[in-house]
Image 1 (cartoon, protein in one colour):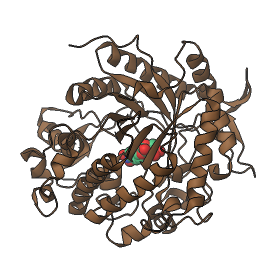
Image 2 (cartoon, helix red, strand yellow):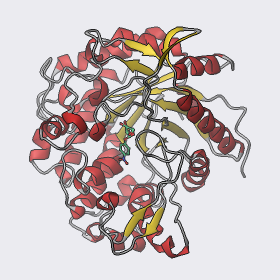
Image 3 (spheres, helix red, strand yellow):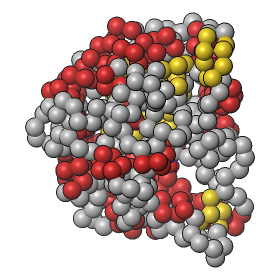
Image 4 (cartoon, helix red, strand yellow):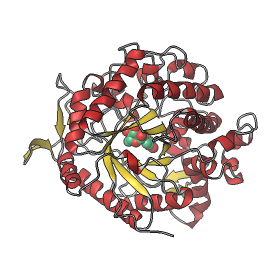
Length: 468
Ligand code: PNW
């Protein structure tokens, strides 16, 4: 029975990811990741940008945590760079890399902010990619080893864990479309990567001690509402839904890949890839589910013209056109808060899991620095409007019974936005890349959220909302 959940407290906070903010790629024994390699090759990233400096957060833990605390966030979601911890991907452990996350977690504790750690936000150690990457089952085994090492160091203080961030991007943008690292264009490899990502997730969760004692392990998916443009595009929409949503949710919820999915991803019918017991391992393997939402997907049956640039991200699907309606953010993504409401209600019905919105936010060209009530700041009214509309959508989904426990904004700082480099800015805080200390200036949206979040009396400590 649907119940109104709007009187339940909501965890509020912000999210970041290691490669996007840390910089310091050659420090303290960090190994090479696929993103170091990918960004070094011309043509992969706008303006030839890379994450070697990023926001220099590796050296600015205290500044960043202060910004999180002063925002009034309950929770800070960050990710751990695998090659800082295991420079070769497995085997030798680099304590200095772990020390950095140790300092971060302690600083968050001192600030009264609940840490939420993501183990994999795309920084695959290059040696593992050299051995075949996620299309190889051995990568899932290495991930379990890595997860255990991190957990042994941080598990006494971190209670909220996510295994993977957006495995769709890792598998399909990385191995099929080739627009993310490692830049391969092999549709079949992407489907295998998808399975191995889920397998690594499930095995890692199983291997983490303390899961029954006040810890919760989930996975972060960028599920999307799929809205066919017309009746003729319904069948096409179903095939988009297969790899965008069902390849993750079906094994998790049903312990199976069904025939409609196998028609798009025949590699998953191969019993040397999907082995006995794999689906049983993945079945039910999440204590909570993270949802990253930015925009709906509107497929339309394409004509005979050239293939749509994003078609490569949907291997096994021909004749795809993707419609992007107005209004759009600076990265070209449609603004449509109803997509979030629908996604939350549908995912609640489908999974029954506690849901945490682990990312939502907007890229705008925030160039106007003004004198405001809080001193110099960036006027980003468009971002305020985006966040307000999406927070209203969250409320509506909760009123309709969706079990949404929290909402984290993407992202704290203007940072390295993957293939878009530094040109597309999602931050609540502006980072002056030309200043030697990478000066951070909160935008109007930061001040607005702080006022919003100070208003309701929220319970201190966020983890209890997601811990079983
Ligand atoms: C997510 N796409 O990435 C990530 O989790 C963040 O690291 C990222 O900064 C944020 O969303 C904004 O992009 C995506 O091209 C990157 O479809 C690209 C796509 C989707 C998600």
